[in-house]
Length: 471
Image (tube, rainbow, N blue to C red; front, side, top):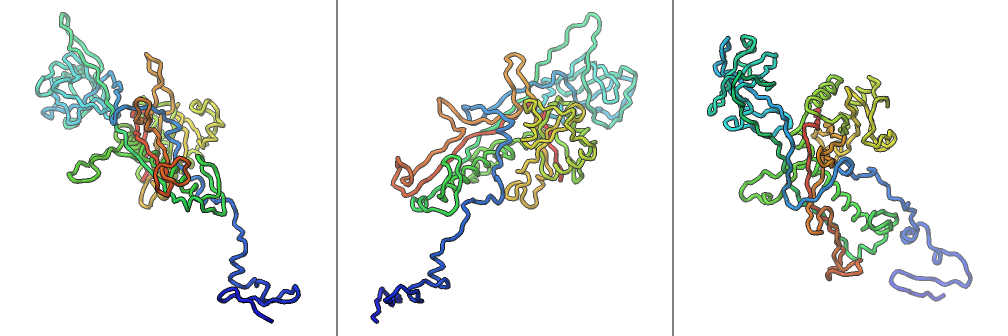
């Protein structure tokens, strides 16, 4: 019987009947047959690490406002009452008038106060003032030297009894003047100045026209472009999420660029002081060391918040280590019962707070809504080996403050973004290329997705915030 050749290495032997033979039946054991078998690939793309987006904190508790400059600022009211840190000029105390000098640290208050007193110009101490020492002793100011910053006081009870070498903070609690005396000099109101920058954050994703038409087995989702069997949709979606995460991270842990070294290529970039630095540099903080948090620590927090007019309702974003310690502490106290918790931040709905993952508890009239902040333990971000962010916690004010005159709400924190004349750089997204797009922008056989924002962090009243650190 004749053979029919169809090319090198491929020969068919015809038969007169429809009979299955090794020549006309493909063997299941051949390599060619294996390639022809349809693979069983599930169309669901498994999210091995769950929802990897970390955004939400600032969007949940913050506000937004445009800025027309790269640097923005605001002013905040200072305490109308003053205190001063003084030390004895000669190291001794007696029954007569004692001379005190301003110590090196001359701020009127250590927490949330970034305004330094020029003691030669605007000293808050005036002749006739009555100052109270920490032990309760009162001193009458008989003289304030204009050039040396010396304060002369007479103890009203006879003799000062505190340590001769101690630097003490005296509170100005009143004044007394002799009959027929003139009026004291005036005191100008003091203000706190806040200033920060916006920074430029960018991201891009590119795919060729060929790859954009390659189909995969499983379906992928893209919140802007829908779902489908095109792999580039996954790449673009991941790029968008990563960009949002970068925006969130810089507003949380960002720092202003202080590097002005000549020739350094980064000196022309602007950074923004993020929430963590804002609290640590200007607000209140508690360092637990390596110890687990205790009820005494919470009591100290409440007392400090109360002292410096902290918010009665706080969102506590905690790393996993601190979060577990708090759970253990409160479980032992039976403190996670719903009674006494205030859900005003969540429209007075307990279910809403629970759905957002908050556990709420109250201590000393202060309500804490605790949530484990995944960013602090993310293995590719703040939870990298050697970091201790898993022991961090940020207490953010959640109550609503209003301007006494205008009635406008005053946020605890805010996102500032560049905008002017109808052009906003809060979130820019555009596409270029000649692939996929109906309206081609150039002759490149690619589709390129671009993201850009220019934004910064703004915080208000840092004395109302608390940073917890466990090493």
